[in-house]
Image (cartoon, rainbow over all chains, first blue to last red; front, top):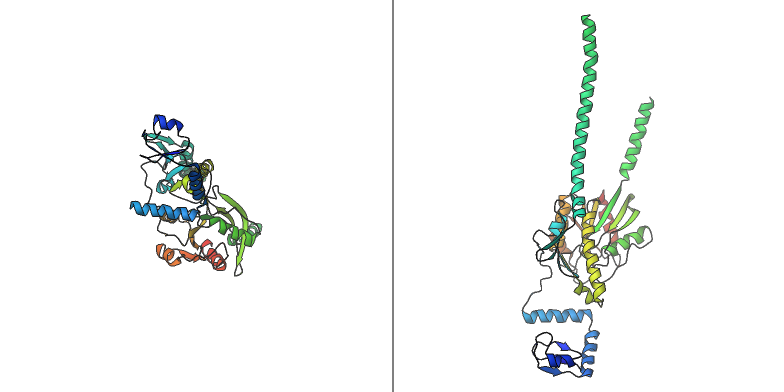
Length: 165
Length: 210
């Protein structure tokens, strides 16, 4: 039989055990008896609410509490890019994520971090490749011009030696 | 003589292909701005097929979608591009938001995980796109961290940008607010769902992409 804890409001659908041991949430032993029919009515009423009605109710509660939910509050994390608050709840530091030279770090819990090494190396490699490519091209150019200069000088030397002869 | 003819031909073909360069066009923006609706509109208009599914629940697109070889024409000009539809970029992804739409907890959590991965993929693709269309919901405040971060990064990367103020068919729509938030960019107000002002969008696209 459903009972609701007087102290914390937790609803226990099958309260036979809870009535003896106390509320599973706050250990209180004071309960309201809730009729099955009333519970079904309340559940049906909650299910019948539309999304907009639920959002309006949420806004009303925030107003009563005097809290501004601030949905668009900027997310600025420490050095991690993604904070996993709990399964299915994520905070993303976009400024961090957009930067190519920043590693991809997930904060799993306080003091627990995971670094996506593959992604981090991928992020950083293309720039290095470009620099290496440029270096190689410059070295090749240098080598080619050196060879050209050598070839140009060689016939003139040969000429000079012939003239001397 | 042969070398001269060869040179002339090379220049001729170079000019032809320079005029018809193929670009990668990326659709970026926050979730539920109407990126996929616009992608579907473009695809329907020019190749007669849809690109992806749309939904009123945020983060419907969780994987990057690419449609290749789309040719559009406007005022006698032709533009060929590969269209890249990206998942919405967000700072917070909460499965409880999906529960409000009647989704089951397990499904909602999986959606949140995929959406987070989608944000990372969207950002990765920024290295591969040549021009970006930012699709914003014109009923929402444009001064958000998501919008400012995306636009700031595109500016730093020197990628041409066209801002689309979508959902102008709705009463709360406010294009002026978007124009004043990003005065340095072309802003075109459209309704991707109903095709309102889509011709002006194509004209602006030619200006930005060329």
